[in-house]
Length: 286
Ligand SMILES: Nc1ncnc2c1ncn2[C@@H]1O[C@H](COP(=O)(O)OP(=O)(O)OP(=O)(O)O)[C@@H](O)[C@H]1O
Image (cartoon, rainbow, N blue to C red):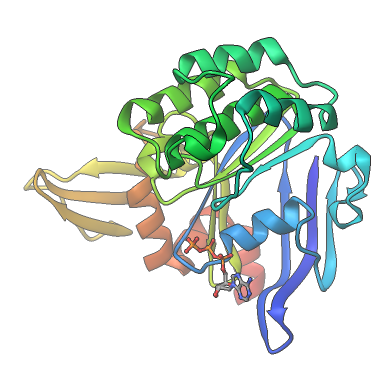
């Protein structure tokens, strides 16, 4: 559904952020986009949403370049930016003005989200807290029923109960016709929600794999005193002991720890590439 091919982009000519980046997002998946500060996550999401234009290459949604900002594209994409401005109007007025742009907008669904978030349609947006405004925009986004939801740091600013509410709402409203891409630093907020991980570092996609594939190739465990560390791709000392990411030679099933995975990929790029993309590694290094 979304196809990025050989995309290059930079805010200035002298400092490119992406060069020749390629990425495909498939329908029916929820992607978690991870990367360090300044890695380019928000820029990539803005390119996907047609808010920034590639200097080279293309970003196509259902075969149409998002930079064209055509109706067919815009009515099927909802973008929640990390920073946003809300006008000085009520939630009901906001919905009346913006919902006509989305043909599949469901008013009843939105009313249920408001109830869930304990907000009222008569509330003025300007009088809400940052977290409450964000809840309105998340609820609005889900009620649009668009094919592609782009959420930039959606749980940032939400309190603890709202983070689990967020996961619950996404899980219950998500359909197989949709794709969601969520960028975050709060990986624990996405636990159990995302089914694919994209790791972006130094303008490159280091990993784009399903949680299932990651679990098949890597195991995540607390090492016992007698366990050898020599095979570990990455280790981290915790209060419980040494947590390790190891190659999964024995097809054992362990829970993918997103924070450990991220650190392992960043610290051991070449080895991870060899584990996940052995063919391209061998060709590149032949
Ligand atoms: N409007 C802009 N003009 C010029 N440079 C920018 C602009 N926005 C971002 N950048 C630069 O582009 C790079 C990528 O920024 P971006 O915001 O996409 O990263 P990010 O991964 O979302 O970071 P964070 O996790 O801190 O939000 C950074 O080096 C940043 O300084």
